[in-house]
Every structure is written in C-alpha cells, then in structure tokens.
Image (tube, rainbow, N blue to C red; front, top):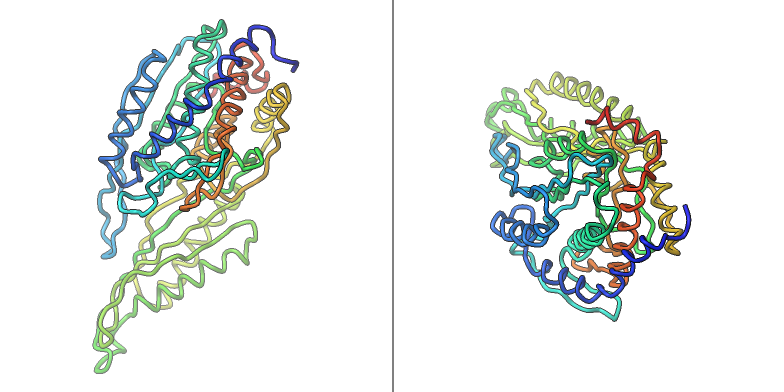
Length: 417
C-alpha cells in the first residue's frame, strides 16, 4: 500500500471535523435502552437506525427474527422472543461486495441502574453501549456516508446487518447473517477494539447448553431408596463437564447453574444443569460433542435418570488462519497509511464474526471504536477514536472498491455466493 491518493485523501478529509456530531449521535443512541430482552426499546432503536441508514440508499428493511426457544426452570422448552433486524442491500451487482455487521442490543436491561451517559474527561465518555457497540455503528455509518459521496462507490456493493440479539448469541439473526455472508467476499464487524487499538484475532467458539435431568420423587425418610435424585445426578454431571478442561486444555468448560429441587423431605425428581463450553478449534468442538454424549450416558446409567440435552454451539471457533490473515494484513496496511500501528490479540470472547468466519468468509470483527470495560457500568468510549476508526474503515472500503482484496479471497467469492 501507499499513502492515500488525492481522491482518497479528499474522502478522508470529509471525516476530519465530524467528531462532535458523531459523539452526539452515539450519546443519543446510548440514551435509548435496547437491552436484548427489551423488545419495545429494540423496536425504537431499529426505527432510529433505519432513519440514520436510510439516506445511504439501497434496499432497507426490518427482518423478522428466526424462531428460537429456551429451557425454563421446569425443563420445558418455551419460545424466546427477539427484536427485528435491520438489513440494507446496496448495489448487489457490484464486482466487490462486503458485509458490514453490528448489533443494536446491549447487555443492560430496561431496569438496570446503568442508563445514563457521563463525560469522564475530555476524551472518555461512560455510558451503556457507548463502545459495545453503538459507537461502532456510528463509525460504520460515517465511513459508508463518506464512501457513498466518493468516486469509488460505484464499484462497491455492500450489505449491512444490525441485529437485535448479538449479546445473547444471535439465535434470531444467525440465519440472516449466514444468508448475507454467502453473497459477499469479506466481512467487517464493528465490535470495539482494545483500548490501545489492537484488534481481536483468533476467537474461541461458544456453546450454551441445558441438560434436563428427570429422576423419580420419593419420601426422603420413608422410602428414599425408591427415589432417583436429579439434583445429585446434576452435580455429578457438572463435575464431569468441568473435567473437560483438564482432559482437553484448549477447551474451557463452565457449569454455571443448577435449577430444581424442592422440600427437604422429598427426593427431587427434576434438575436442569446449565453450562457453557468454549472450544479453541473445530476439533475441540467435535471432541466436546463426543465427550458430552459420553458423560451424559454415564451419569444417566449411574443414577438411573433420564437426561435430555438442549442447546448447541451458537458461535463456532474463529481461528486466525491464512484466509483471515490476508484481510487483517489489508487492514493493517490501511492503518499504516493513516499513521496507525494496528496489531491483534487472540481472545476468548465471541461475536458475530465467529458466525461469519464459519461460512468461509474472511472477517475483521473489531473495527469499532477504542474503548473498554464493556458489559459493566464502567463501559467507556475514547472520543478521538470515532473519527480515527471512521477514517480507517473509509480507506479500507475505498481500497476494497479499487481491487485491493487479496486474490485468494476474491477467488472464493463464488463459493460464498
């Protein structure tokens, strides 16, 4: 790569004075509670985002979520409701096609005490979703606006997906993400970068599971031998799951909760064990699937109970393989041309980038603002990163439009289409 051309420099200059407007936009969005389970707040947020993205042109719609379910405390599978997802398609016939994704939901429910925005200093703003990821959506939109006004726009087609359920593993939007990923050649996701500007490299996968254990009730004093204790079986199963991490060090295992039980004088006949598994590789995931079947069968036989496993790996592992690294290298080169030294670090966290990469798509998934303390009431955004990261994305999109996509990636477009 080289220093920005005259045409590129003009586009980048159009972003230089947008800092105050971008900050005001993010603060306004942060004031709208859009917790993943706040359907009314998500509908409001989707409307506001639709009004913001509408002027880009293209075909904008709100897509209904896929059907999803959850296991309740009685072991019953019940409907799980999610908000609608914003979807924009622009120039699908263009030779270069990119998917840009973000999420409108936050981890902060409508009754959570963290609802307000606070300026901590001249360059640090604290607020719900400021970094994760309403700031990232603002960066995405600013870059797209700048490129749309440039001579490079005609060569670039893109899709935007802003989903409503990323913070709860995207069960309602996963089919839309896959559908869009198969039509494009590269993916850009706007999760926050690290405070120092580093990007997330490889990511572990993540699976959430509920094991429904059905035993047999009996009087704890009169005939306990006739009972089959579901709580004891759940505890045994939890220990078996926890042992996965020792048996397979590249797999994280976290038994998180046991629901069930009742009065002390009754042998409990129902328990639900909830647990999370995080595999580093696809091989880890396959091993975990086999190990779960093995330990469930063993516990069921030992305790004479029935065990039904619900859930799955909603986030596949995302290794930093050669396909991913080529796109990272392009981002790094664009950063260098803007005076930014961009590196990356592996992380155990997951996001929609996992799902996109599982489709064979090269994706960089931390192109949002610099910030930190996400998922806590100390979440913050670094103000100067709004323009900085908008410039980075704008240059990246312009370079993609000009054919900078590595040949090995471009050649795979037909496989994704």
